[in-house]
Length: 280
Image (cartoon, rainbow, N blue to C red; front, side):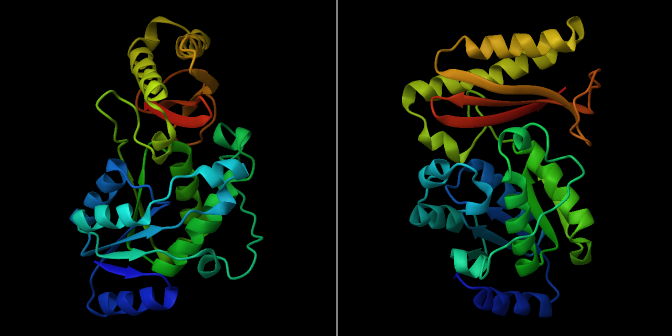
């Protein structure tokens, strides 16, 4: 496994790969790697000749400085995990390498960034787009891999790719959410939960699973109310939002259509903010 920390280093290896007419898959991460990330790497390994993984905690997508400060970081552990996952190249830039000057670009996502996460985390998705566009321009992969757990983010990145980065001809691949044995969606933030909070957090996915199976028997409003009340019954949990949206537009729907509609939630477990979603 090759470890690179500058664009110049990375480009030297990527040129050799391109000259040999080999394909490149890319998995951008913020580190604190877990099985969800490894599933993306495995998918990339299966579909490409080489896999590049980036580790970069992007400050521009944190609207809460405390959240940025607490974000888990363990480079040595991450590198051990990547080695065992048969990653080919790791790119670990510092902030000056990604942002040599202030990035003042503002993206128009046609409303995709105004709902759910965008409503509660102002500027978050613009920060995501800034770093993803930078990384895409640096790596220029054939395919890039993202997990469905970040449902809204995937929609934003697909829009970004189609409308701002089409010249790169990158195929965005969405992979299924990977869950713990008790159903909790895998996330780097799970490391911040204590043992009691961790047990409570499993209620989120259990509740979504329960109500996505019986949605036909109650109204959409009742469904949202029942999900909210059931999660809030646990004293360690506090729902920030529940929304039922169209898979393409992310707009709130009046009628649930199986295969085209998803329920999305954000829940505070103590001070740790967790998101999840489940299709109907």
